[in-house]
Image 1 (cartoon, rainbow, N blue to C red):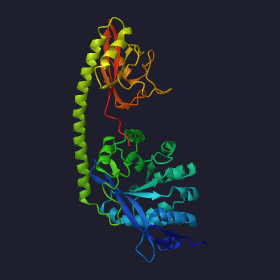
Image 2: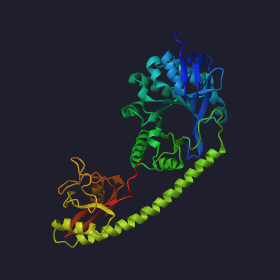
Image 3: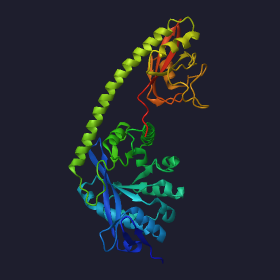
Length: 420
């Protein structure tokens, strides 16, 4: 058999992957996964480093598995890594029996070995209960969907938890999320990076939070590296965080009290942000209401709905806060054009364009609330307007003209759209 040797030019390490595996020249590293609202360490992710025989040179896992793939030793290396991590976790488990171990599994080997029960036997030998083990799976690396599903079902039935890793990165198949029914979904760093500044990442993350909540799974934000990112993922509904912001992986991790202090600081900062945003929102709503009141006053004096366009145009010339506005009749049919003071037409395309007179809005949520539930006012969540590309909220209000009901819809410009 070919002797697989690997040269890491950056670190100068040369190693024989056969020797690494046979001598178990591996050391386990652990990184905490923090329940921020629970103010506790929920679990540890077990990571691995190789040790070049005869030196103290650490070998990153990527290089280990690249060398193992060349030598056809991926499965033996994967098993040796799990042994090292399980052995390293035992003391943490004894100190805190509720602590979870997030154990990485090279999903590609499932295609080769299927449900061999080797992993189950490893865990049993370690003395750790399966209920404390979270098997991390990168589903995109498994080519055989049937075997993957069988593996997940088998280990779930044995009491293990299943986590989908790196969701949002590369070519994650969302249909497999539904099929595998994971207990935990870990969102990749590619989504988390600069999430406090990039609006589109925030919306993707928010949709993933909603998905995991609906399927009864726990969401974990991976790779959080700053306080701002930690606060943003909390704001978007994720309470479990992993990343350099709390701690880097270590071979001598201690469940330090300062980690709990740091989670408390993040929660306090998040609460302060919520209070400030609530105050800002109330001030904006007051300003919105004053603007809409003035527009309705102007619309209520016309003799016929045909005059709505002129009145809206005149009103919007008086403000920089409005992106565009239009009027619906009681049936939800748009009875004015979409009038824009500043940005209308900036994003006109064949699909993405402003709504025209005659468009039916009766299936939209705000119409249902205003007419069917008989509310007077509806304020939407922020969104990017398909008509103008601006970040907006829509303020809708019922008013009357000649005993008939109408709905005024005003798109107010929010803060400039955050971009990377």
